[in-house]
Image 1 (cartoon, rainbow, N blue to C red):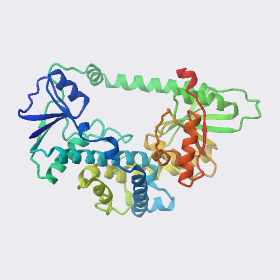
Image 2 (image 1 turned 180 degrees about the vertical axis):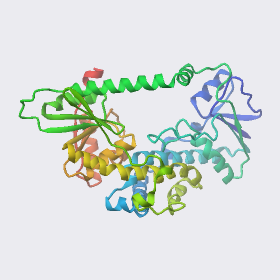
Image 3 (image 1 turned 90 degrees about the vertical axis):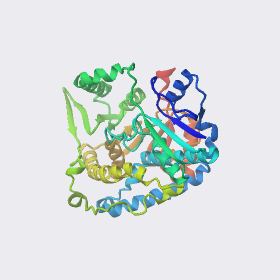
Image 4 (image 1 turned 90 degrees about the horizontal axis):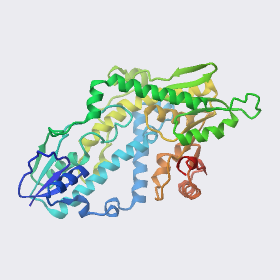
Length: 431
């Protein structure tokens, strides 16, 4: 039997006949239900435990691969070795998220094919070939672009000699109008300036959240905040009892108050455009067509050659993000030393600048990092230690039990860092 896999479906889309229809997204599920068309889900053919397998063994195996990757990047960028920068580990969260996505999706696709043994596969979506990377903050993901299902199914059909056909439909049916997107296209500067102003006044409000008791003998710390959420605001009110000066970071711009003025300092990469970057001159760079053996581990886990998919993200990480990190980290260290920053405080690490600012604390002689976990959960996430905790000096959880759990994971992997406590700065927001 032929299987028709559907990600997107417009009201006027005509479906191929004599197929078993598979809804891959909520949108497809809704539209098939609306048409009263029988369909199945990929989830009908696997359980999460079956796909994930032994997660502890996988984690150790993956950590070995990251160690190898760190060393390979030092071979490409001698300055990374000189500065002792483990570049892939610095970006561990986003790289792991991307690699795990490919590996787990590959396992799902293969399980489905092995069970149903399709005579042919038809794939319907509206964004085949879409891979426009809007900014460097989240480019290692496959979000708002062609999905991993769309990229992987053709490769696995080829592996099993299954005929594959793709139907690309229009992005929107004629009846659908995205009002918000239309307004943004008409008045892009208005929206851009509106959000910029909101961000600016929010930062001023945060900086004014300050105890101006200059006579206090306890004031001795300079704090740089990377995040300004409400619970960080609550944290800062308590912390300000011992703070000499607050600094606020946003996209490489750091502000602080020097009454009656708001002072701004910029920390920017020498070259943000890879086409203008003389890597050999600035980083001792030796170009290779590819990092040797980079994809072997991933391909083995996928039981297929998925290099062409992973390469779209890896090239961006290796040849754009890494040079910018190498450039920015010493600049943040210099800023910390100049301003005598004692702590940086964050609740998320998202952008390249935030990664550089956090990594700089590990190389700084004085500046320490404080991370406040921005939620509460009840699952055994050992990998979170490697995603976040190991990069910080102090880590605050929301509950006592979470703190004890994170300590047990830290101790299991033989580390004394970070120092872990609990502090519920959510209480007066949600209760």
